[in-house]
Image 1 (cartoon, rainbow, N blue to C red):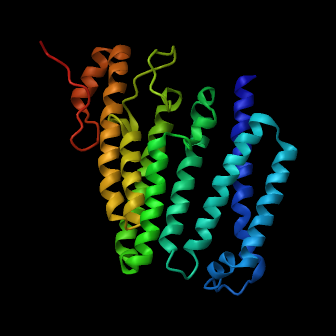
Image 2 (tube, rainbow, N blue to C red):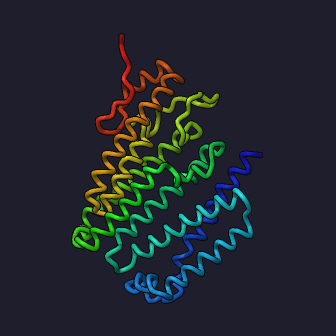
Image 3 (cartoon, helix red, strand yellow):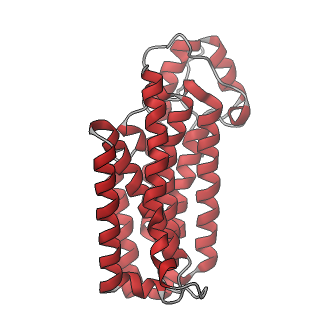
Length: 293
């Protein structure tokens, strides 16, 4: 019964994400001419804001009617992420200097939504609202807001800095490859994957060493590390590129050491052998040190 309920939550998230994504219909209703140079100005004008506000109100009302309690909480979060993804698409295809921020909106919203969806597929028993990772930590929220502020301030004061298209493309590749690697790791690990480091070994818990785990001991962290930095390269945020690199490196160093304590406890010599053969995948992070004496 619990499995069916959680499977239902995954389906609800897909429907709600698509409903939020439906915001892209607004500019399509206006014209079929194929020219998108007016879209950004329209959506940021009074009529555009009213159209978006009405759309949000209608969709939210619809979700309130058909979903109750915990299911509504899932639906409204997925819808919000779909809406953000849709707005990012509109900005990305508009003739505006904010194009790269549109890429960022798509990347950020898809990352968080896909975390929930993939968890619903591979490990529904661990599925919760926290699986969206929207409330990951105070530090994560501060980092995100800081990147938005830096982008806006530098765009207004040094606009040419935000027009380095080649650098934004490098960031986009980092984001796509990083997210692909992380989701590949989650799918390969299956029910062994959990967003929370486990201190007790489940009966079904096995040591995964195939697929992307044959190349990196912690591929999900490698993917997240480069995805995180890539978002700032995409935005051409020099301060946050440095800040994200240092903060992410420190976070994953501590996280890997904590996780490997549990893995050594769970799998003993098997994990030691695996550790000798395969690196973490992150620069200058070797994982927990084992005394040979």
